[in-house]
Amino acid sequence: MTNHQHSVENAPSSFWRSKTGVLLIMLVAISAFYVVREHFSHVSPYLPYLILLICPLMHFFGHGHGGHGRDGDQAEANKDEDGK
Image 1 (tube, helix red, strand yellow):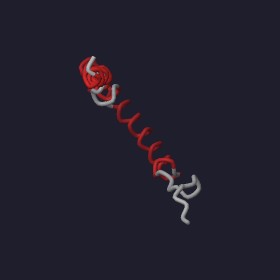
Image 2 (tube, one colour):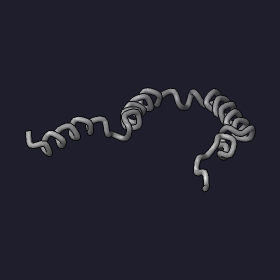
Image 3 (cartoon, rainbow, N blue to C red):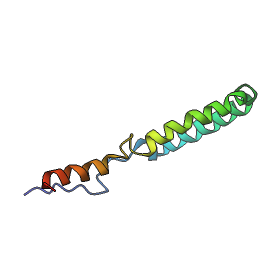
Image 4 (cartoon, rainbow, N blue to C red):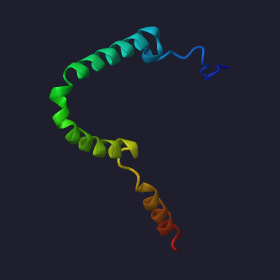
């Protein structure tokens, strides 16, 4: 008889949680900070447009890829199947 349950110890760890992944994230964050700091005068005129661009992206990704209206459709489909 085989046991198909996976224990936490046997699960492969994520690259981003390893020491190398954390180091890579830190280096990217630090370098991004210095690049933005040095080139802020070039980017600052476009900040209002970037903020407006973030709004639809947050709406799209924040609601499960645009599926925030499906619950009502499912309830109506169940009502139609019941014949009410």
